[in-house]
Amino acid sequence: MPYDDRYARMNELVKDRHLLANLPLLKGVDLGVATFDRLKASTNYFLWDCLSTWYGDKSPPFCDNMLTEYEDLVRGLPNKTPNGILLPKRDVYASYNVVHKIVSEILAEHGLPRFFKQMMPINVRIVDGSDRDIDMRPTSPTRPHVEMWVGFPSNALVCLFPIFGNTRNVDVKFYEPREFPPDYQRALETYEHGLPLLEGATQYDAHFDPGAMYLMDSFLIHHTHKTGPGLRLSVDFMCVYENPIASDANTTMTRTVDMLSPDEWVEIGRKRLWYAPMKLQGYVPQNTLYKHPAALELIKMER
Image: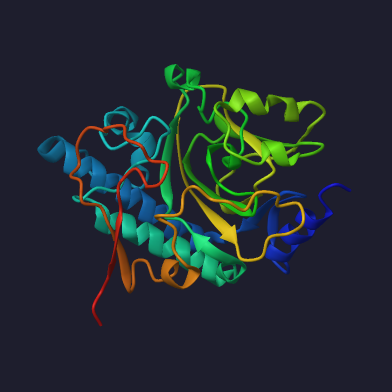
């Protein structure tokens, strides 16, 4: 098999874990009810924090699912990027760090940080099934892609947590290509340049269902699949493996500034904080090739 080394690496990550999805390059680790409830509560509070800060006296009352109860107000938040990232800002960075803390605890519980040398800040992401205009962009997440095509290395793993919303109307499709030549393991000008890899690819029988931590190999082509209206909220981030394998042809990374060591990353929300210096206001596009779009700053708290 062309990906034996990648299959083995994925299996090692989830050894002795209860899986809700078990595909060669995609694993869905069962979070359990209590852990998933904590993750839901923290992301829901972060969303409420953004809504209450932005709308002030006109903000909606708190509820257990701010996303689906107040879709129109969520769509009006100014700190959501075209790719759906709900940016932490100076006014709401504290609640963002709570989400980060819980995510880091989940990875630590499953023994994952020891596999990596670098880990990036989490993204809280909201995707709108009704918004089709942004899908025309050459690097829209609705187009089949891998993270290598925007500058991440071959020896990377994507971690994904679907949490709220209509995950069937706003789903994710996954495809394992027959091969992944080294010339495609690099940044591409547009996702369209990678389409030849879809020829003969195997589509996975998998959905982006809440309750699991999805671990996705960097070779797995994927895209957001919209079939109807509704919002979906999820958390995602990238990790870079400590030890590359034979099929990792490109271990060069262009996004290193905001990456942390695993020891630093697991301390977010406890001994370290991500601080966002920009206030909550309209999104201003910027060159984010080397920086997180929120221009995060790492603060080490005094003992």
